[in-house]
Image (cartoon, rainbow, N blue to C red; front, side, top):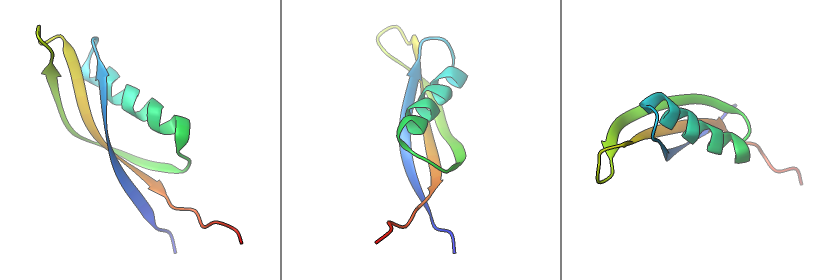
Length: 68
C-alpha cells in the first residue's frame, strides 16, 4: 500500500509565476525522491516594487520504508 506525504513550499522568481513554481520544484527535487504531484495553491507579487513573483505549491511524494 502506497502512502504519500505532502509538503508546502514557496518558490520565488523575478521573471514569472511559472519560474517561481519551477524554482520550488527544483529545490524539492534536490532532496526528495518519488515526487508524484505538484499543485499550485497560489501565486502573487511581493517586494517593495512588486517585482518578485512567489508561488505556494504543494509537493506530494511517496513515503519509503526504512530497511531493518
